[in-house]
Image 1 (cartoon, rainbow, N blue to C red):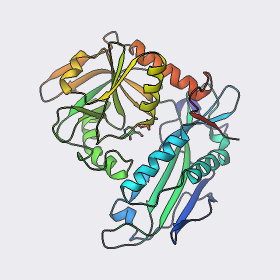
Image 2 (tube, protein in one colour):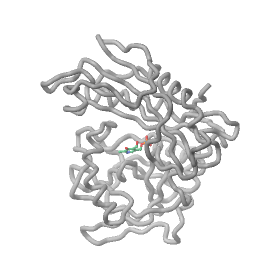
Image 3 (cartoon, helix red, strand yellow):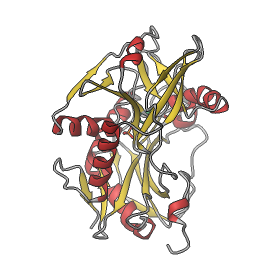
Length: 339
Ligand SMILES: Cc1ncc(COP(=O)(O)O)c(C=O)c1O
């Protein structure tokens, strides 16, 4: 794609040539179809439109120096979508079908996978919706699974830089025992007001607290929270947060480095004791946090006081990006090649 400015691509939708689709009807999945249309034909009573039977995933493909295309942790995303589907009573996509659909979508659009060295990648968006018509509140009998892709630019256009985030107590993105641990659209709709509020106030995202007691840290906008203290990687254990695949990967890298990993409730007061704080997810890998501002108490928790990301966050970021791009060996079997 000679006409794409890889370095300045936004994190947004860019039309590609093909997407793949598959129907679930009469209790079984059909054949994978390749489409060049960006549109779907949907019944107006489809359960995804009324009752939120909708699941999605987000993963990326990278082009290495060797020109080969690598998909990062496709199997983990397949498993998470399976869990989400069960969580909102949808027909789960078998992992082999998920993998085939993702690989086909990437392969068919291979020339949209950005060249090595620009920090850009191909974002992959699997989507599962209840397509069967129902009026009563119940699961659909028919489902539609799609995968489309879109080239996206580097998340940090000016380099890996710390951001400021704002504590949010007036909104929750999920209920204590609700759907926060699933990747369903409703959680994102629930987060839009608080995210916009944070953006208006000049913050990059919101810091959500546990929705039951507001005593513990939950998530940092659409990303997991982690902190570094005493050579330990600390990340919240909570029923209302999405199990981030980036977070799982960072935990593994920390263990590899001989660091301690603690997945546990993280009391809000502990913020003042951390050496480094960050948000992690597919979009940016790691977003280092410079300041956490609590608008209710006017308290400010500061990290990266020299304006630079902390050493552990930097090391983890560089290591994960190197594995994704094929610059470092993939010792955990996280990468699948598109052949
Ligand atoms: C709410 C939420 N938390 C965390 C994450 C990070 O998850 P992952 O690392 O799998 O992208 C995401 C992004 O997918 C998210 O939407």
